[in-house]
Image (cartoon, rainbow, N blue to C red; front, side):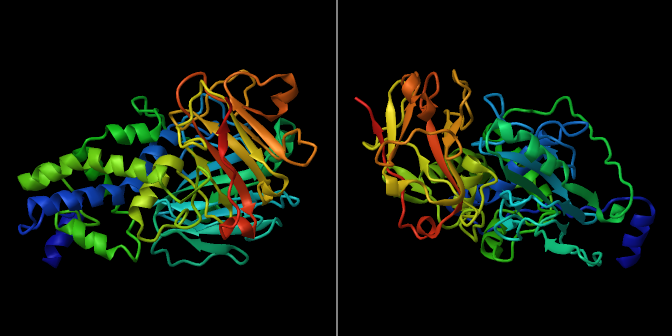
Length: 464
């Protein structure tokens, strides 16, 4: 056998692992259960791949798109035309990178931020955050570190901190505090100081290679692309991705379950080659699982005053696969709670979904102002979970805006389609022109009372 393998290699052949097949003892009912579980487990990785394909479909960095292993920077806040990532923010300028460290590590050199708040969260291909260099964790002095792929056994240069990525591919969605448009120039200078090179080029002149544009690449929002995938495409893609992006160490139970319908890490997978009961189960999985994933996003966290807040299992998820998939769907790139907390409002104080044809007010008593060490904001999203055009091009409002406080130190934010009047426009967050909407509070580097649950946002009240 050994000689035949050598002969094949010498002949230039590529030996592929055989496609996996379902076990004969799985019942139709259990196959349906496992297929649904497998879809939920796989969803974040498939969404990451779709996002990678869209965000790297360029020749050179442009906006938040860039070739693999090249850093892209947002030079200004996103607007209503931005669709790459759902629920974007208008508080920070993003720095984005799709990395591939399957061949060698990437070395990052980050300049001194001069005390400015920033964070560089790295997500593996399962969407778990595995390291977050930044002001809260490593400080704001200049620093150099490397992202290392699974199984790499080399040595890094002296002074280069090592971070091991659980998967060969992943995503960085960095954020740098930006205090309005007047702050753009200073933030851009910091962004330009961040340098990335493969380890083999560290300390040497390096010119990043040009990317390749795929004209037929679907550039619609990634969650919409996954929604449209049939089971055969979805599960075949998932199987291919697992070849270089291994499961986590605590995933053995779900892996054993998936083997019963033929899905095995490292092996190709074909729905059409499975028994009919398994084919039927896999075909039924997407609509059923997607309904659960979207509902999990809507019901994630603890509900208080109409706001849902995740204080656990966000950013890192353990084996809570449904919650992980829900967060990927609704907020791909979410930070761990120590870095940011995102209370989400889907309905008003009466439990009614927000309607852009109505008027609302969010009132903070003086002692209710969001407690954050860095900053806070309130952001508006339309039915697509994206920004929507409005008369004043304002998508978020927060503590770095020129807010007007009441005489007792309390604060009112006006949420409605039309202007609340010139004297109140400083505190106006415009609603969409039509349809429903949702909102996120963002508290960066939240204080202890947020993390322990003793503080909660007040309810959003409808104005009669």
